[in-house]
Amino acid sequence: MRQEIGASRKALSRSGINPERVPVEIFDNSVLLARKAAVRIAGLIREHQAAGKKFVLGLPSGSTPIDVYQELIRMHREEDLDFSGVVTFSLDEYYPIAPDSVQSYYRFMRENFFDHVNIPDEHIHAPDGALPEEHVAAFCQRYEQAVEEAGGFDLLLLGIGRSGHIGFNEPGSGPETVTRLIVIDEITRKDAASDFFGEENVPRQGITIGVRSLLAAREIILLATGEHKGPIVRRALEEEPNLQVTASYLQEHPNAVFYLDRAAAGALVREKTPWLAGSVHWDQAMAKRAVIWLSEKLEKAILTLDESDFYRHNLHDLVYAYGNIDNLCRTVFEDLRKRITYPDDLISGQSVIVFSPHPDDDVISMGGMLDKLVANGNDVLVAYMTNGSVAVFDADVRRHLQFLEFSRDTLGLDDGVCPDFEKRCDEMLRFLEGKAPGEMDTEEVRAIKANIRYAEAIEAIEVMGLGKENARFLDMPFYKTGRVRKDPIGPADEQVVLDLLEEIRPDHVFVAGDLSDPHGTHRMCYEAIGEAFRAYTARHETDAGFRRPLIWLYRGAWQEWDIHMADVFLPLSKADLDRKVEAIYKHESQKDRAMFPGAYDEREFWQRARDRNTNTARALNKLGLPEFYAAEAYVTTSSL
Image (cartoon, rainbow, N blue to C red; front, side):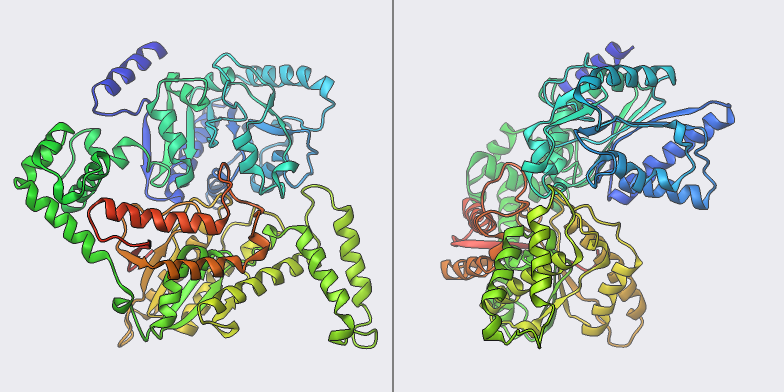
């Protein structure tokens, strides 16, 4: 049966109609994705319950399935979904790690799911990361036997790592592999570095259920969200099954499906270049994408493309739909040219809120725009949504405390003025000296780290002509866990943003649209702003004279908007870019070596910003548009 399914999928792929080798469902956002997965799980639980059978569920950890777990918890509380007949097996665990460690998957599953539903404790199974190494092999054998004795997985929920792993089955894990101790891949360790406050603290091994046991599940749902998952999702779905992408072996399963949000699906042929996957509706937006793609592929300016270029690259339908290719190319060229917005044409005299997820995203992502907004006389407020304290090295705290110690006399911090000064400094220094890898900071240390980021943020915007009065530190509740992994966005977070919108009544709002942030803060801030914005506009849309603010979406250190997506290109001179880089330099705690730079990119943030902006300008020039030193790109919208 599996061979027949695999053969039919390969035949479909070779036809050129659909290169995906596993069924795929694409959702507009992660909330809809999570709801669909939760509804499927709930339906199967009820079916098994009605038949008097236990339901065996394989569960992953990590940020991707959290929304699914939250929806299942809601269904348990509000819809009486009964988990008493559910048997669960967690897929993996770091090794070695204590079960109560902040980073352990055992604790993660307890905090995010098991403690909130009525699964009996004896039905919950998890790999033991605290075993002596000589006992691990026997435990793995027993764990696999326990899955078989339970009847095997009725449903297996999976995530996918950027290494292509499922569970901890890293590259090199074939379909015959069993539950075992495995060396964790470099890219996985880099992605986990933020959870452990540094890559050097990430365990080098993990315990994982093997690929053979995973493929034995009766049904599999793989979840993937975010742009950073796009490239590996494409490889898993569109390449032949191979050892380098373990998730590609799901192609051999008869009842597997990928649930993707649109960001994670962005690298698939049907999303990135849909005309190569089959017939498309050639509206103006799709035609624009195809013309830009062809220009880039052939390295020819748009206005030099001719009809034969389109025919040679399977764009016959586009030629037929538009008839005159010269006119089409000219239309696309003029469309792009009009999106180039010089400083004199930017907004002026308006009220502007710039939402910055971390205290440096404003200058890294839109430093050129910020500079021009100030120069054009706009009333600009930069709202820093989180304090970024988890990204400050302990050495920075020691340095600032030593500065205060040296400056006691100068600042008049004698015993009469501040009697506990020396004691409190000593306590913090002793804590830092004895701090275990990955240990959570004390409240005082977190406050010092936050203040370091705040001071740097103010210094940075001073480069642009702003001051302390133009900065607002929102310190949103979801971030206050003391850990990299944050709480879900809730009403309190949305209220913070709503209160600011009510206070400022902005004409324009700048929001981070970069959903590739490896620790998810950008996505969470985006979600909070979206909910608050909808509440704000609903409250005032009937007010006389109310104008819905225009939203400008910018991107940050990991990605830039594709040329066909951008609504505004802001040209930057060398002096403009130098000033932007100078502002980024002010974030000294992130300079030279950032705590969380992202995997496989050793560049500093100022280098990424410089390269991204110069590459955007270069891409425009190759299309035949005016040549600039650098450029920032933005998408504008009336809603989120």
